Amino acid sequence: MANKTVTADLPPPAPTSPSERIHVRELVKTFTRRGSEVTAVDRLDLQIRTGEFFVIVGPSGCGKTTLLRMLAGLETPSGGVIDIAEPGGDLPAHSMIFQGDSIFPWMTVWDNAAYGLTMRRRPKAEIREIVGHYLDKTGLTRFARSYPHELSGGMRQRVSIARAFSNDPDILLMDEPFSALDEQNKTLLQDELLRIWDETKKTVVFITHSVDEAVTMGDRVMVMTSRPGRVKKIVDVPFERPREVLELRAQPEYGELIHEIWGSLRSEVLEAQEREQLASLRGRS
Amino acid sequence: MTALDAGPRTEDAGAPPPVRPRRSRTAWLGSDRFLAVATPVLVLVLWEALAQVGIIDTRFFPAPSAIVVRGVEMLASGELVEHTWVSVRRLLIAILIGGVPALLLGLAMGLSRKLRAALDPIIAATYPVPKSAIFPLFLLVFGLGEASKIAVVAVGVFYPIAVNTVAGVREIAPIYHDVGTNFGARRWQVFRTIAFPGALPLILTGFNLAFGMALMLLVVAEMLGAKSGLGFLIWNSWQTFQVENMYVGLVVISLLGFLFALLVKGLEGVLVPWRKR
Ligand SMILES: Nc1ncnc2c1ncn2[C@@H]1O[C@H](COP(=O)(O)OP(=O)(O)O)[C@@H](O)[C@H]1O
Ligand SMILES: [Mg+2]
Image (cartoon, rainbow over all chains, first blue to last red; front, side, top):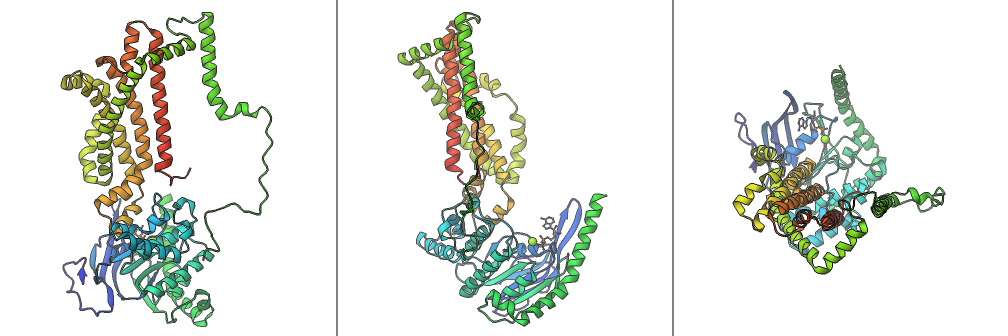
């Protein structure tokens, strides 16, 4: 267990079971912007198990990205503890699929997908094999030599997925990976991701603002409150794997789960909207 | 799973070919390319005619044909090649000496806030100083040999490249740095895989500006403190009142500038294939 951040007045880390991969306690993040403070994440507690597909839903602006960036070490917490169990061997701890376009425009699809392995100086043959495998899985083999500007948005997002999986991290952090896509592409990519995930069974933390997507993909779904982000509810998703998106949606339990999650999310979304309207009114006057 | 968006966006194969508006027979007269060639040709023809008729003073504005004839003579005697080669050599060495450190420092400054804080004021304060003004100083320090000319041009080249490189790195979206961090890129790898390629379009712009600066400084330096080179050729021709020779020097300099711009454009196509055009 590696303690990433410790604040003085917290109890020592509780002994964690070996199946627990991420343990977050009392996590706080406050941004200072033009003199005023914004608390994005407030005293958040969270445990994620090894091999679990953990989904976070919440209204926009509630601190989902901030939470994920703290897990990735890209943002320093203002308080609290993040424990992430060290992976065995020399696997990288985590790879992120960022919200929005994040593949390098100056690299070909192949070089983008190979980025993590190249940075870790893996042998050429290994890189060829792994990257070839995931470009194949994501249907990008034919475009290996293309540059991102020659691809559609959906294809660029697939490059980002291939890049993260090729890196073979212990934990995958995905920040609304499909939110910029149209409905059809989204469904196809969800299927694709489920299939790849079934092969690897990695620990996944997956952010979305779509309740449908949460229930389709996740083992558990955490609903966040509107800003400052806290845990409102955690819902178990009992569907068996391997899952198939369309089959899943035909089941009656699917609708019930959606209903349950929406029920707890709704008030948070309304609150977030209200705040936004207020802010824009204030901005105008 | 490529059924829905299979490949780069292509045009709808079933659509009828686009109908081109019919163009009139004289439309080419208005085309950009025609105008680009026609205007200078017209100026030259006019100049030639006025010179032949004697309306303009050929002691100051010799006919273009006379300049061409003199150019050919100077080529044949080897004089022109000699001067041009000397100048080009100075330019290339100076661009190397000034450009490479500018590039490396620019990348480092673009990446490091500390380094920017430390060096920005110095650069901002010395940037506006006309580099020709420090040539006398360089003559004092380096003497009349090659070093003083190369040094002043190198200093002139340094600024536009450094400043543009810093701007190029700063313009890279922060998310790419996050990607580098997340995928474990070390400092040098960030340099090589993010800062340099990301800044490359602006770096090339910097080189383009730098070459204009370099030509200007070189000619000044060669006029003041050299016995060879195109600047010397122009200055010497003026002093000996060989006006055609002076024009030949001017033409070669403008050709050099033009060729370098072409070179950078070609390099851009090779080095920045990812840029939407
Ligand atoms: N770098 C930052 N500086 C200041 N405020 C930020 C920064 N990043 C995020 N925020 C604020 O924190 C809140 C949560 O943002 P974010 O985590 O991106 O939300 P989400 O991903 O759930 O939409 C927002 O109000 C946002 O404006
Ligand atoms: Mg977000």
